[in-house]
Length: 178
Image 1 (spheres, rainbow, N blue to C red):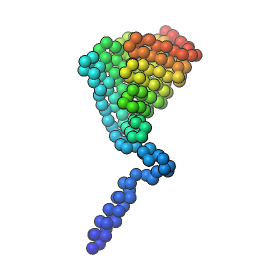
Image 2 (image 1 turned 135 degrees about the horizontal axis):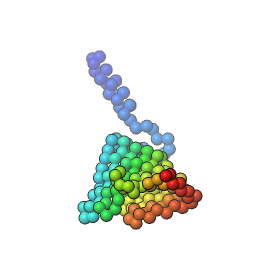
Image 3 (image 1 turned 45 degrees about the vertical axis):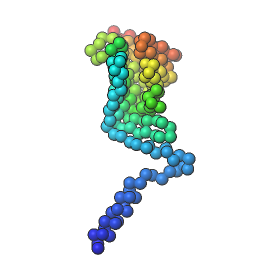
Image 4 (image 1 turned 180 degrees about the vertical axis):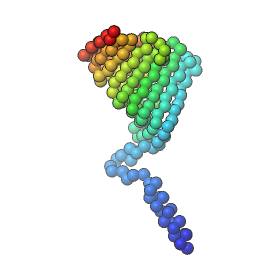
């Protein structure tokens, strides 16, 4: 009898502990993540053009009503045989829709080229807007670009990985460290 009472109490306690938190606003029914995944990685392939897009994240949260995916400690790698290797890291990422727009935030680092390439470019900022299907990267925040012995800082940037063209928008400053 005592065992059955103990089992019933444990059941009620587990039910209470595993319930989602109460909503604070009536219209925000789906603001809680509909799924959460930890320590994940994935790959998107374009077999015809031999393009690979890989990603990894420590944590992923998806919100159904906004079709938004948020990730923590994210890294992206884009390989295309006709273009230099692109690697991106950030503390946070937000993916809208089916990956048409990706927003990287906090401690963002982008590397263009392999580690052993002399012309490797390193970009650091706190915000980047990626448009993967167009191979475009944009920001309106402060950026620093390093290549060889040169460091360039600016406010705002547009980078086209197809052409390799970088457009710095304002307050451009270059320093050559020889």
